[in-house]
Image (cartoon, rainbow, N blue to C red; front, side, top):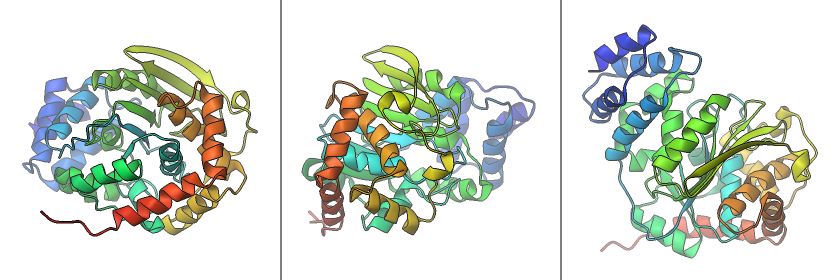
Length: 343
């Protein structure tokens, strides 16, 4: 099937849901070669200016979910994540925001991988901070219960990603997997803040989230091509709640912030991004802190911990300035490295 799909994509034709599901199922089952996988990912990402259709995304996501290790937590979980692929090379805003949201009382199931199209992915940043990212399902449940945050390392919970992980890194540009990662969290969260790399994805992915069972959330696109709520430009937002959606644009100024330059949000290596994270969590003022406050504030609003975005931002600032966010990180490090008791 993958051969026929590649030919179709090269000819600039879209795949149906069933075709996308079938090809991804073949890839996740190890039935295809690395050359075929690379050709498929490249063709799918470049067949049009808007690349993947919602049918292609949904079909691939369904196949990937079918091959994933699922984790039953019995908790209402939240995820904050960006698709990547925006080439902004910003610091790990969503990772730090996740810690702040957990400090504010949310149960955060972070799901991610090592860097694919950037220098530092979520896994790289957490590892540089001292977190053990190789967390078993039992340890993840323990972390959620004790600390309020866990990390599902994609390589561990999506074992079939071994067939494409190296290829993604070698390609060096965003692929459909940038979109699929946020749609395939093993904890099956019911709340999500999803940042995307292109404006055209905002409303379609909001509908996909609803179809996947997300009750409350936002899909956001920083209009300076940032897959976060942007401190350096207006942000397009599609908010979803219990089956309905509404779209609007929000600016840093409307939330009480001074706009910065996009370059002010740049990160670097895992070690450099870990230092940025520690500086923000230790209360250092500046644009990086404000970017975290915007996104953590949105998270706390989505989770019902605040009545609105501004209230969420105020709560996020309180979590940082009181030391609770740093305490959450320290507990995350401690519990994640605790020896596991084998039954």
